[in-house]
Length: 327
Ligand SMILES: [Mn+2]
Image 1 (cartoon, rainbow, N blue to C red):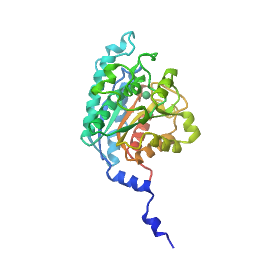
Image 2: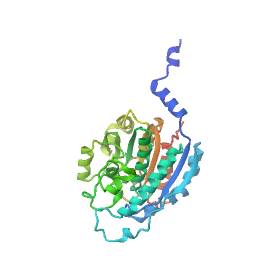
Image 3: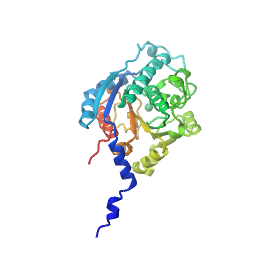
Image 4: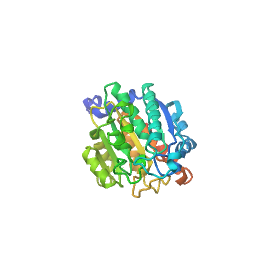
């Protein structure tokens, strides 16, 4: 005879998952930010166009979401980018301007009840998107966690950066370290705490970045950890570490975390990256929490891509982040 008690008592996490799915937001705002002045290759500016060629909005709608708005935030004239680098942060006022615009757009999209997906462009746009996300939760006296997929630490400061490129600094800035005009965006700092921040996929980290990761108490999983633990176990750990007392998770996904064999269309190539299956498993498990409330997808560089393959991969990964499943 069947155990009826077991049938009515679903495992707690399954019940929680169903509840999360029931209240799931079904609206998306796409915020295109074709910015390249935070990095060192113009091609990053073509990322949004390549994702539209790969039918990003249409694919999102096929999942049952409504794209309620598509916004483009353009970067100021890029004269700063051609000047000889004499400062510690290249194009600082220009990026501060873009960050302010991105922060406002992201916060407005969340307040309107949609999931903002900010499409890069280089990773400096996360300075703005995380500011917008953080302002949104701050006004509601709620907390959020940060999952940052990247081959690199992105946690340099003006004093440690070799290149002065701001796309190597957005995580540091979000945690309150760096140029004041950026850390103080929206009038407060830090935007997120180290203990609620998890880095995944690291394999190219500068020595001062390692020090700052430790100092700020950020949870960091390298490719070695992925190989050793497996992505399933690692994702469970990451989702525990990001916090229990949070209302949402911000996903900041740098496409260079993927192995360059399958994602050649990036600026800062680092061999030995995540496989197609590892990335989809991590993002599926993240989506199953029902907590994904805001997303960045950055650093696609179509000038380095092969037949838009990396853009198509990015569209697949965005769909999985929104909850697309095999079954
Ligand atoms: Mn990055």
